[in-house]
Length: 237
Length: 384
Image 1 (spheres, each protein chain N blue to C red):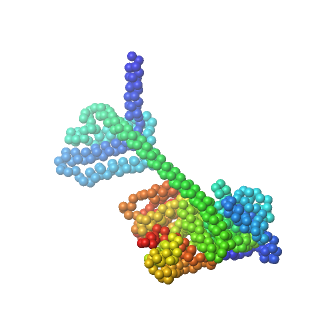
Image 2: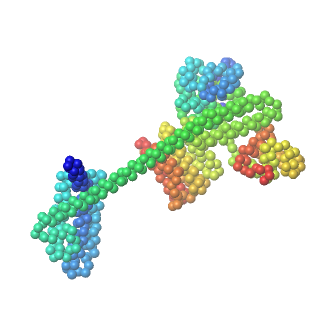
């Protein structure tokens, strides 16, 4: 979700100067990984990657930076990313701020003064990082746009395992234990065709909407594990 | 025998100290009360004896009533005035104390002379202050002084002992409260530390592992890639939902999510078991969020109240309100459960609420509302 604009960006005017990015992340492993990904993009010029808010504030290149990608929690004793964003804005009123947070932030924290909230985006940390999208958010925010990450991790209150039949549950328990179909059929004393039908129905219950590129059986087993905690899934039961 | 002399000296000094302490000025409260009580007694005796002397079987009810109510009222008013102006009934100086003692004794004797005739006196059973020889009022006067002195001294002595006990009990209570607050502070610090560790180490590590797996998935064969992506999805679910909920439950990141966000997340965790309506006045939120301890207090008090709503009240709905109200800030948590029953025993939740309210100088109450549900209310003075 991207909205609003406060000034015409260099990108949209056709001039493709890379966006100068300051990156602050106190986790060195994540910082290294992200630095590698961002440095490989021609649209980005990573002018500073650091784990320290103080280093970022003292950095001479703040005045000419386009956007700052800031971790929110910068470790004990340090100012957090929100305070750092406000401080960077004091130094460079045109710098865009992207908060990179473990927390889903559908709204900007109330600590950010309303007068500063243009060009201030939130991005939820996620293993399914789409670098192209990250670059776009950085460049849009540098241009004054606002991006908010929707809350993307929701859990259904429904328990799909409860809707499985006893035999489907036994079959899924054996699949989860690594058994192949023939062994499961023998164990349950049914034909392999009947087992396939049972598993197919169980998969549809466990994974009603399979995301693109995922393996159905693996996803079903993981969903089964997730919901079967504390439930008796002993195939002999 | 110097040892014996020293012993005698020490014993004499101890007795002297005891006598001085025993007869020292005590608060005026007993001196004021005693003549009043005597007045009550003598008036009643007068009424009864006068009636007996006149050959009446029973004294008139109205006079007896007046003789009881009037002195009782005077005593109550005297105590109220003393409480208002003298405060904690501090003892006067020696001269003032004994001057009052003599004056009240004179008052008692005067009342005695004016109220009882010889004929009535001969029938009196109230002998303590009876002036047996009316021709020798000085002796009677001394008796009254001595009696009053002993009475007030004994009362004062016992009052002091009682007061010391009360002070010790209050000090012990204060110590328990201080310990309770230190425990709550330590608990909060531990929660914050564990939450920070989970966030900074475990959650971040899972994120990095997920990103690495995702990178491998992008380069792998379709079949392997699909499996790896499924695994990454689950890792993300564990990191982003399960672990996040645990961290949030331990210690919300108030500076980031704010009080409103923290309470909304808390309410959402109850899911279908309890519908929680969060209604916070923005001015009140801004006031509370300016102080992290106050923010923590509001969160923990609401957390305890909601837990009780579900565990004890079997409530299905709860409303949380935070409102400024005439120089106070009022937090209320009302539910539609079974309310506070007579058998409800204050437990850990009550102690935690008490500690957090005390830590932030708030006053809290819990009661059954008119609708029958439980109602927890906390008030903080804001001065604005």
